[in-house]
Length: 157
Image (cartoon, rainbow, N blue to C red; front, side, top):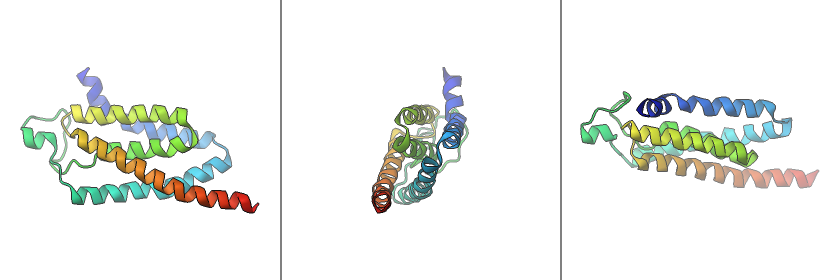
């Protein structure tokens, strides 16, 4: 079980972007356009808010405070928020707007990676929860704004 969690902590995050690129490729032109617009705004916003969160809150990684060797190597720096989880939660939030069934699977991957990184000793649960909160808030904010623009454009035609 430990080897599976180490694999998840180190490598599983790669699966989500691959799945999303395939979903994007298979989507029609209008959905691709909307994914690009929403993603081009929400993903950088998530990253910027993550950087701001990191500047406002320092949370030493578990191995820094416990003295226990982590299961995967990592720099001894601020663990908040989890970059892996932030990326995956941002992707899952984005896809949720367009395909809830696929998004559910992406959320499973996100949670699995987050829990695995906690188990590996490189993050606390607050780092994971912070990342998920930032991603959902960023995507929701951008979506509310963009949806109003999309609705105005549809009404004009």
